Length: 480
Image 1 (cartoon, rainbow, N blue to C red):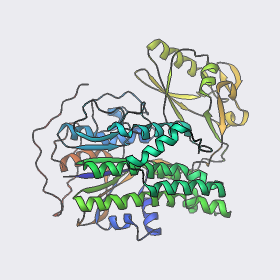
Image 2 (image 1 turned 90 degrees about the vertical axis):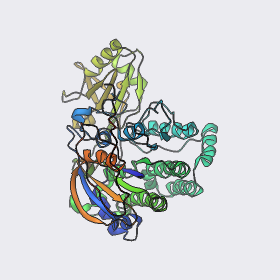
Image 3 (image 1 turned 180 degrees about the vertical axis):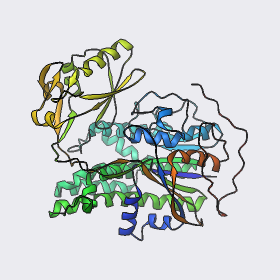
Image 4 (image 1 turned 120 degrees about the vertical axis):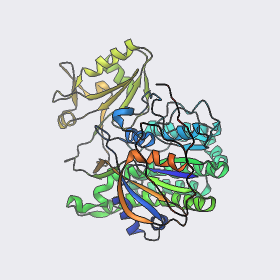
């Protein structure tokens, strides 16, 4: 049994169907004609976020149990992810970018490659030849902050890293597409708003070369490039849901951005489908949840910490602290001791909006504090917040109101799961399943006994699939 697992973050069936209607000759259209299709649903509690819903899918258990709530949270190994269970069962694994996958395991023997997610705390990779790419990847994530960065500043070290990329799998085709993208940005500023999508072709080049060289029995590849386009351009893609009429060149450009993202994915799926067909793999395409239209009212901007040193100074914190990578509007701070943690927590708790609501929603894990920045109409209009009872301007705290395309779609619990193998009898009816059934189903296919806390997986049967070997008496034991 061999599986390629394409993690297509936040993509719902509505977007898949929109794409295949617009591009009936696409690879994704062809895959669907020979695949079993499911609609997954997560029952995670609280506000849905990918850094929680992917661990749910990977672990086969909901967040009320695994309790993974934010990026760079210290994670207990009580409920290990799918790749770890397979590796401990002796299956070869290749992982590329799956959320909450940092750090690189100490025991690397079962892994053909292991590149943690783009929010990792260090640039360590396996093999270590990919570390320059991961270092570049993390630096771009740090610069983003929910906005498209300005001009790319070239340095000698960056130039050397990019030259090294060609030895690691970076293709001339991708290089040309990046150069073309930057030229288009010069001619039309709208192209700057889709620059973030091009992180996916670069990372996929490295993933695909590793895949070709190592042929792991199970591998994952995570891509977030479509999620951002859906968040920002759902209204332009599906204007009828907002009773909106596209107006002018800018609107019509934005109306193509989700389609542009899907075309990048389709190019990747074309290569993966051929690889799966040639080498006897099952190709699975999944999202841990989806998106749908949301009406946020009149857009007045987003609040963001743009000067972290000024933020520390503004709240009055002078101790040691590490600002880990996180996704807007979250910030994750970690500390060396409980005293510093408590002091910092008390200081940020004293910050309130104009309407006297907390400026941050806090989540704790060990000595890491996740601060989710909240902003209100009054804060954006008056540009000050309260520290205790004292009103102070946003700039006192290193805060700024930033402008970007407003979000018109947000998270909803239903995702996609496509199971394809060459010659498979298609099942187009999209049976509703829970997202926690994905992990035990994959373990079943590999003949690995699922841990007792997992729900029963699906029975995927077809004459073309290899006979499922009954699992040996394998019950992994993990320290809590």
